[in-house]
Length: 415
Image (tube, rainbow, N blue to C red; front, side, top):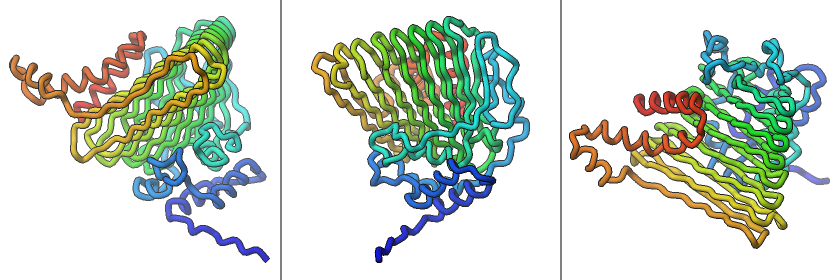
C-alpha cells in the first residue's frame, strides 16, 4: 500500500480555495479541474524559479486574504483613460458595447488553458492561468478586421467585484490593421484577489499600442498575464504603469512569429510602503531579422519591487537586435528592488544587450537646481519626474502621454 502525505495548506491557500469553490456551480469541469490542482499543489512559492522573488504562498497571507469584492460605488462611470474611448466591460454577463466599425466583440465559454506553460521556469502548469480558471474566468473575444485603422481607443475594463474581475481576453488584430487598447485595472475598494489573462495575436504589417493602467487598491492582490504573438513586419508597443495594489504580479510573454517583427516595451513602476510589485517578461525571438527594446523605470519610496526580464533567441533567429534595461531610483531606505535581466541565445549573429542600475538622486543634479533658487523638495520632484517621463515620451501618442503623465504626477504629489 502506498501512503501519500498531504501537504499542509497555509491559511492564504485555504482562503483562495474557499473563495474559488464558493461560486462553483453545476458541472463546470474546467473549474473543478483547476481547483483540484490548486488543492494538490497550492500556490507558487520561492522554490519555483519563476516565483523566487514573489513567494505567493507567504505574501498573499500578509497582503490580504482573498475575498469576494463588493462593487465599488460609481465604478460604472469611471472616466475613460483616453478621450473618446470605447469601453468593453469584461464581465461575462455584461452587455456588449455599442458596435465599433471594424471591430467585433463576443462572449464565449472558453477558459484559460492552464496546462500550457508560458513561463518555462514555472511549474508544469501555468500558475496565473490556473487561478484565473479556478475563479471562473470566461473569454471575451475581440477581433479587428484586416486593414482597419481604429482611431477610437478600445478600453478593456473589469468592473471591481463583478464576474469581470476575473478577466480573460482573446484579441486578434488582422493584417495591416492599427489599434490602441487600454487594459484598465481599477481600484476594487476591497481586499480582493483579481486575475486578468489576455492573449493578443498581431497580423502581418499591423500596429498595436497596448497600455496597462494598474491602479488597484491598497489592500488588493492582482495577478495579470499578457501573451502576444507578433507577425511579419508587425509592430507591438506596450506601456505598463504600476501605481497601486498591495501585491501585484504582471507577466508579459511576447513572441516574434515573422521576420521584421518589432517589440517596443516600456514601463514605470511606482512603489510605496507596503507594496510588492513584480514584472516578469520574456521576449522570444523565434525567427530571423526581428527587433525588440525593453525599458523599465522604477521609483521606490518603500515596499519591494521585482523585475525579471528574459530575452530568448532561438536557433536560426539570426540578425536579432534586442535590448533590455531596468533602472531604479531608490528614494527611501525602507524600500528595495530586485532586478534579474537575462539573455538566452542560441544564434551566433545577433546584437543583444541587457543591464540594470539602481541608485539615489544624483547629488550634483540636485545641487545644480538648488543653486538656481529651486527649493530642495521641488528640485527632487523635478528630477524624479524627468527620470520616469523620459520613457513615457517615447510613446509618440499625444493623448496617451498626457494621460500617463497626469497619473504619474498625481502619484508623485501623494507620495
